[in-house]
Image 1 (cartoon, helix red, strand yellow):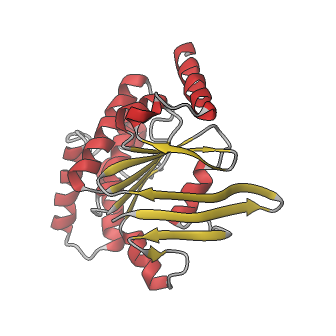
Image 2 (image 1 turned 45 degrees about the vertical axis):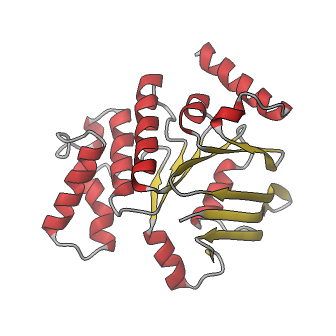
Length: 248
């Protein structure tokens, strides 16, 4: 259940955004992509999940090249992808339970009872047992993120992608989301990919970390080696992130 990007390059017109990116994302680990704003993190994520097509290189899901696969092959990969969006992306007119049930109704032939059981299991897993009847407007930002996680794991995906999961959250709530992502990743042996600039997240749950700088991979390691790195760009990123966090 690994994901590997090989020699990925992407430009928009005359503007190169990614250059020769190589990164192996491993199952059962939180694989993080970090870097300053504008370094190409989100573009790389979109290339991996198929929202953008890279100009060069390959995106391999268990050895299968996503962008060179036929429609049926891409569909099978997409069925195994769960997404946690930066803004949660819940449907305002649906209840919490209906939001979590949405992919199950769309992509499975499960019975209403099977769907209901799965929805309740997922909400229990993120500690939201009693809010299923509420609308997104009636719950907090942190609870919306947890609903987003419940929906992302509803289809029992092999791969989980999280785009800035702690954006807009206070440190305590962000820590709860980090803990959930880490536990679910290791519990279900998923290949989790997290795009983040939150150093708390990086140092708390980053099993494997890639630092992007200058449109390419500048450093790779784990959270234990991060603080001992002698890479000047990475050290600057860590310092600036910590400074801005303490300033808040």
